[in-house]
Length: 400
Image (spheres, rainbow, N blue to C red):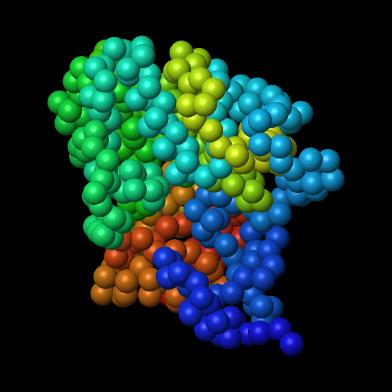
């Protein structure tokens, strides 16, 4: 006899590390923008696995690519070549307008790899003295959970109890070009920035900020590294969030949606001069660039190459913004949105972000809180207008 949601949640407690605080829903099946729990209740997914499910659950083209590859070859390690990797790398480089691809698995791996590459480049190309390279980051950042990465976070929950931390990072206020310029010097290997800060509440910088970073890093002779793990691959109405300012960073960090919601796939995509500093044995990954990941990643690139999902995110993003604007002063104090991605600040008198998320869950909508009374909305890019409007109506219902 199958167990109920309550029984399964209770069974997790003694055997599963408590590193998450999930909503009390146990998902058993999913298709498109809808998920179903073990009791058969349906929910509209307005989180998309933090943008890992940009194309929805079990997109037919992605599932077909995975099934086809499962019948052929899944893993070789990079000790050998495989017949899917070149096509994936060519497609991703072409999609982003950059030259070379370093395939990895998770977003945090992509960030760690980007840090290593930036430092190596600083020593070999820029001429920074050994072990003196610095990287400038922004306050409020979220780039992952490894010890190096949380070491330059200013979130006490992420940092506390995990030191000592890796030196070599300088943090400045986000969206402040003057502070950024003051922090850059002859030791700076790179400026590492999220074009939109997702975990911080979908913080969108002023127009010109990203262009300014590009100009500053060129003048200073350092790299512009853009972490597009959450913001990239169609989420904001463009292929990349930096495309809103027509900026091409030296290094792009991609992940989440690159795996189509099927397998973990990430990548460092960069100018040839940057990635060519790596030589055999200096960096690697057993699973990075495996044939199954490359097959799914190629299918993702193929979907984005049509431009359909970028257009949908842009068009439906207007519906999302209009719906949220109508709620300002009626339970919503403010919001920030770009494409199908929004941070919504709830009047604290009505509840915390967690409490609002729980109320939405009872209305059949899955969203997630961040930082107090803020919730994030990031539906799959396959969502229909009436489904999006229904989610906004549910938000209005739990607030007004």
